[in-house]
Image (tube, rainbow, N blue to C red; front, side, top):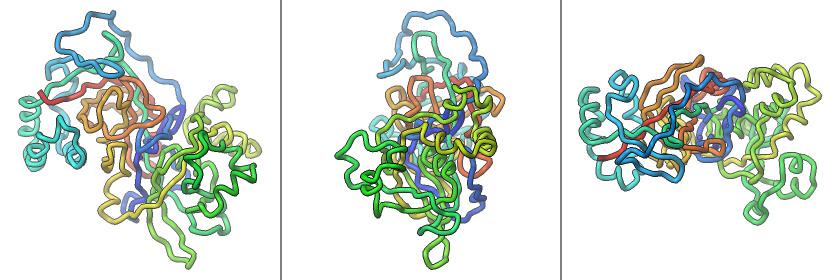
Length: 396
């Protein structure tokens, strides 16, 4: 599922997480994240932090013969040698994500998925040779000659929650209200907290209680989370809270809200937390600055499921470091993408799969990078905001 700069990305993309108490689940209530637009869904929007300068764009040029027009943007055919870093990636890692996309392939890929599955045990050289023989790379442009965009990131928080109200756990997370489809947009975050009619509509819809309202906001922005749930009998079990809908209110970044008022210079989640620690009386004001609320559904988190992220908009489980959220008007779900992003947080030249989307992920050269789960992934997701170039890889 749906991390970053002006956001943590909403995305709700399909995240079914809270994976087992496995090695990754080193819970941290406030971990920063994400996933945009991505995950199933819509709730991720990056936390803000100035982006490095984007290289100057070349002058507009005439469409290249063989270009493919998308709803947003254009794909321009190129040779494999034009992909920066091509040949230096560990394709085996990307192949695992590709196999996931083959669980729900679009028509252009369905015929190739048997070969993709057979090559899962092939060498990197065999995989690369097959790609070059069977596929064609295309540079993604938002306009003629404009191939630079923005990369952000999202993640899956690992959190503690209680099935019932308990000491220290009093912040409710809701499943979708029965009348959600009848009222669009539904009540805002502030109205949910203050109006008796909104509270009445949510009566009986609480699926978990968290300790910190800001951590609950992070979870909503990322779109899903891995939760160690304390049961009414005192036992605990891991579950995933996955995106199930929103109140259809606009997403407003609390990081952007702080920046616009000149209250912070660092609008990453750690920066937001630091500001709140100094201004606890303004916490409610900050929360209400974002009227969007995400509703959740509970999913199982088996040992196998805990090895992957939540399900993205494509309907397949996300793979840390190999799944991205995109604008489906520019890149169809399941498309392999060569992603290049240099910057202070990380330098990326790798094959990824377009498997998710998010409300903040719009435009041809725009992606949200799924960092995984836990505090390390949250830190990257909360800070990543770098220049981006992408090449779509498509059957010949």
